[in-house]
Length: 214
Image 1 (spheres, rainbow, N blue to C red):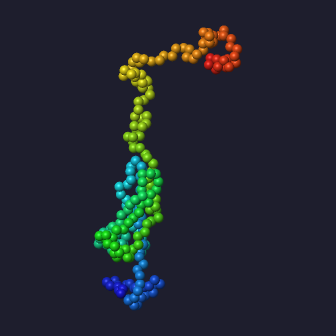
Image 2: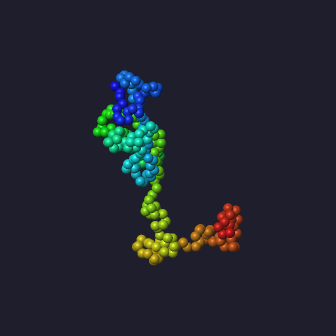
């Protein structure tokens, strides 16, 4: 049995699916649930920041009274219970991840009046509501990995680079290799072929000597 009660009952009528007024309040029928769209708030994070610690969203719908949406959570409204948002498939890998909203009936009730009268659906944008971007180092890490935090390559850098095995700065190393001219082997049979009076007949040798000494 269906009946309208209250001070404003005279302003309303009970109609069927075709809009025709139902005069007999007794009979079989069904309730067409109102759709409430759960829209997650988009978030953008970087891998080094970790996954979000929480998610939020907003329920929306058509032909809903002012105290139905978005005031769903308070228990004194027509829609008792809670709505939370989560991203169970989110990973610390670059890409887009879905954030879904879920309605929980008050005290875990099953088949309560809210479930009978309302249908909760996901907003299409929820499929890509969470974006995980590539690793972006913070300032301290970036500074440590760049020349900004390193020694400026001036005369002091080269002076400090002379540190030898005895840990002595600004001193001549205790052991080093000093090249002695000629730096390449240009002696043939005890004769220095760089001398102008050497007659080089072999074309290959001449080419090499010409490239080295001009």
